[in-house]
Image (cartoon, rainbow, N blue to C red; front, side, top):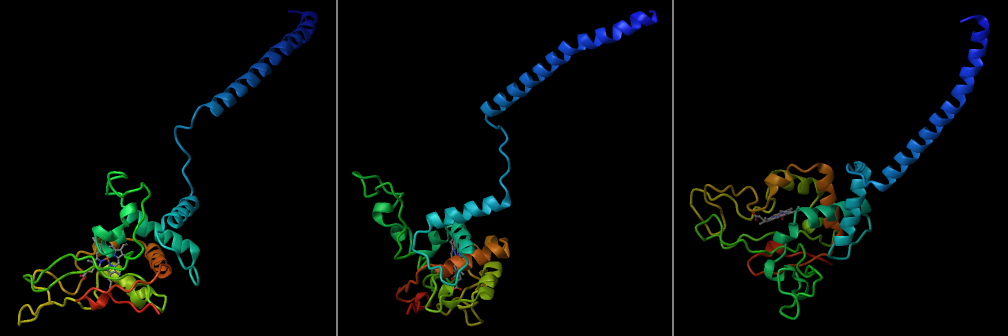
Length: 254
Ligand code: HEC
């Protein structure tokens, strides 16, 4: 190739490359549009992970929506109360044991275990019975004492007139109960050498710790979650549960 031809060839190449690059650019735009349209139309298979903040916030919102009693927010951190409600009412079912039992846990028209109207009282709208909500008194029967220890009752978790839950319990004590099962009321101490006296627990049961209560499971919760439960239990209404033979369930509401 001589120089002349070379000189002519360069602009010829440039001329050639112009429509070429136009074509390339056009197809790139086309590809981009297609990708955009496809990505808009195709549902995401892998959902983006929610941030911790979003997760906490939705638990707080659910907690408020499902609390079956009016809540008192004076002096309470709203977020902790909402999270506490979520744990108590959506996860741990504290009221399943800490109400007076299945027969009165829900009001009849709000009891999801009963038949729907007209064949039964259930209207389709669940409603926990506020008169027994977390007031304790479910009877777990004679326990650990050859029938002499009359009954093992779930305790009253509602706040008293001090505004602190479980009849005025401090957070430190509450934390200790959920972590170790310690029974501050010593309702059923271990029987001494004299044997069963009507309220003590015989071996192999340990009367120093709460029975039936799932503290061996609750002890694994974070302190933050236990705090949230405590705050929620401070925000629910006080109930004075009066069951003959179980004075520990009484609560001074005024
Ligand atoms: C499986 C039933 C059951 C569940 C679920 C349950 N509890 Fe209990 N709880 C009991 C019983 C029964 C006692 C009393 C045990 C005893 O007298 O030995 C008790 C005792 C307690 C006590 C001690 C009260 C006191 O006066 O010292 C606290 C606090 C407590 N429960 C909190 C809770 C919380 C909070 C939840 C939910 C996160 C919960 N419980 C869930 C059965 C249960």
